[in-house]
Image (cartoon, rainbow, N blue to C red; front, side, top):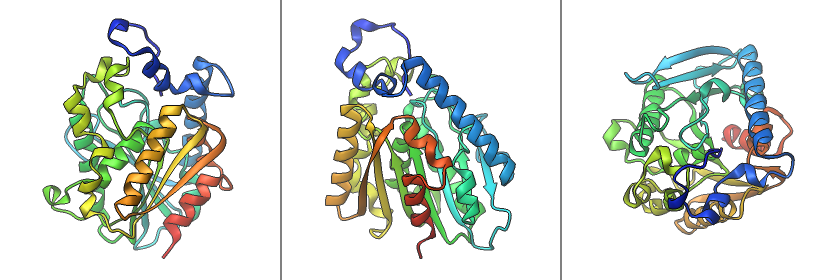
Amino acid sequence: MDILKDKNRGKVNEELEKQYSPSCWSHRMDRSEVIESHIKEMTKGTIKGRNEAHTNLDEAYGQEDYEKLDIYLPPNSSTAPTLLIYFHGGYWQMLSKDMSGFMVPPLIEAGVTVVVVDYVLAPKGNMDTIVSQVRRSVAYIVQQYSAVSGVYICGHSAGAHLGAMVLCTDWSEYNVIPKIKGALLVSGIYDLRPIVHTSVNDLLQMTESDAMRNSPLELVNNMKGLDRNSEIVVAVAQYDSTEFRKQSQEYYQAIKVAGFNASFQDVTNRDHFDVIEKLVEENYILTQVLLKMVTRK
C-alpha cells in the first residue's frame, strides 16, 4: 500500500518513488480506486470470516494499545490444531487486523486456526518496535497454543517483510521455540534500503542502518532457528512493479542458496492488491498453495 502525498519531495528519488508505489502498477484501475477497492474487498472478506468462524477478537499479547490479535477457530477445532499467523500490509503505517481476516473461510474449512496480528503503526512506532512486536506476538501465540501440530506464517507486502523477519528471529530471547513449518510471503519487501529514499519513509524515519538492520535479505544467515525442511513460498504478482518483483526473486534465490525448502510463485494476471485479496477464494492458486502447505504431514 503506498502513501499518496507529496511533501519532502526534494529528498525523494522519483524513480524509486514510482517503483515503491504499488497502486501505480495496477492494470485494473487507477491509484485511488485500487486502494479503495482493496480496503472494501478485505473488509468484506473479514466480515465473512467472522461470521463463519468462532472468534476471539482483540486478545492482548502485550501491554500497548496496538498489541492485539484476532483468533479465528474452526467450528470443529482439534486438540492439536494447525496454526496460521497472518501479518497485514499497509507499508507499516496503514490497515489493521480488523480488515485482515479475509483468508479465514477456506482455512477454517480445512480445520486451521487463524491468528491475525495487529502492531503499532508509524509514526507512533518505528521499524525496530514493529518487528519486536510481531516477534512477541508469535511467542505469545505459541505459548497459548502449546499443543499445535504446526505453526505457519503468512504476510502481504509490509506484512511479508514482517513474516520474513519472524523467520530470522533468535527465539532464545523469547524463551520459546515456535517450530515454524512453513511460510507464504506475498509481494513483500525484503531490502528496506530503497524505502529510505521514498515518501514511505516520511513517517517511518528510517536511517540506512535502521533499514539494513531490518532487511530480511541481509539476515538470511540468521535463519538458524528455522528447520531446513520448513516450506517457504515466495509469491509475487505479474503486475507488481519491477522492483517488487526483483526483491521477491532475490529473496527467494538467497534462501534457496542458503539451503531452505523454498519455492517461487509468479501469479499471473494479478496486481499488488488482488494477489492477496483472492485468498478468500478456495480455488485461487495461492489459497491452494497455502492449504497444501498447512495440511501436509
